[in-house]
Image 1 (tube, one colour):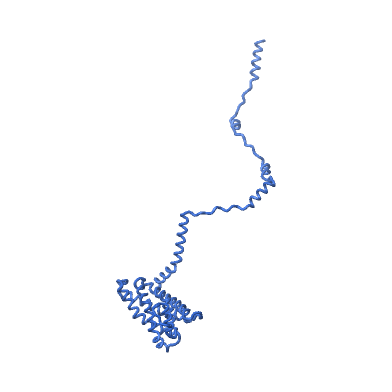
Image 2 (image 1 turned 90 degrees about the vertical axis):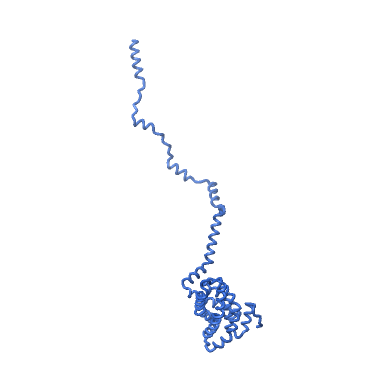
Length: 293
């Protein structure tokens, strides 16, 4: 009996031992997966988003939105930025200042005779406008007279002066044009030959353009010498500077700058009835003549 009991006890004991479960590879992989994160239902998230703000929170947001925003701090340019801006401004100003000069130089190179003629056209008209104002202050402008003077500059003085200066450059010491002896010879020839011929031609053509051909000899005789005297008060020094320092292509332009004052005097002499206008203008313009008017 005891043996049997032991046997039965052993049997019973063996039967009560837990049987280890059989784990397959799929089951092992299933057990090794990490736990899933908890997922908040979409309905709960939507409810949290759509939950209305409290009255105080809404008022605070409205006040913050309506409050003026402070301006951004001013930009202080660096030294490099300031230098770049200054350089750009200087280049722009220089371009605007010298653009007319470069355009005129290009025109002189491409069409020299026409450019010089147009230069005299403008110079003669400006001179006569000033002459009319000086001789008759407050009077209405004689536009036809201005056009006559401009036409003379365009058709005669400009082309003739250009050809004259070209001849001087080609024939009077062309190898040494800036020497003082050359400058003196050119100035003397200009004042003896060109000034005399130009003065007589000027009064003759202007009188013809006014429709008074019969008056040409009397006008030239009356105004030739007074005009030459005024000419010698201005142009010898002007031409010494011209032939010594001014490049040949720009001499007509230089002459027209000087001629604004000269043409004012010349136009006033042309349309005066006697020598009183001459002495008045020359006395105030050059301080060389002090005759009473």
